[in-house]
Length: 127
Image 1 (tube, rainbow, N blue to C red):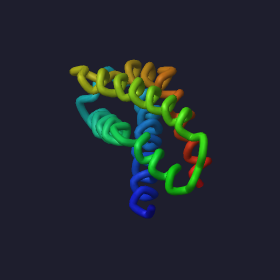
Image 2: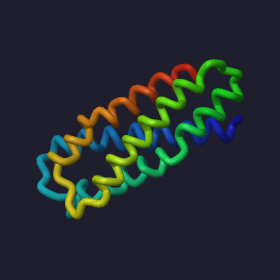
Image 3: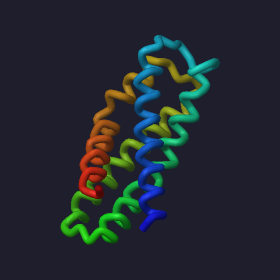
Image 4: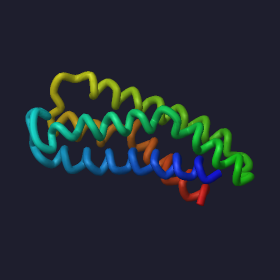
């Protein structure tokens, strides 16, 4: 269980810190991501993308280990939200230039916000 708890904490940290960096980046008024904090945005998005690969399966393992019942329908919904958010992140990563306005639109994406809400809910129930 310790390994799953550590993986879970890493996934949550990667997703939350990426989102927080995206909020700060969006406020900078950048035209592109060529230098400074701009070059970091892709690192954060890449970390978020990697965490989204198995965040739901990690949550499922923890829920099972903790004996939580009736969690599967919620995890199914979270899986859909994670896949949609990941699609947004991958689409943005494929862009040649990342402006603050583009990242601001990612922050506002219903898919990203739904995933964050899912993560807050499941994290509370796994504590």
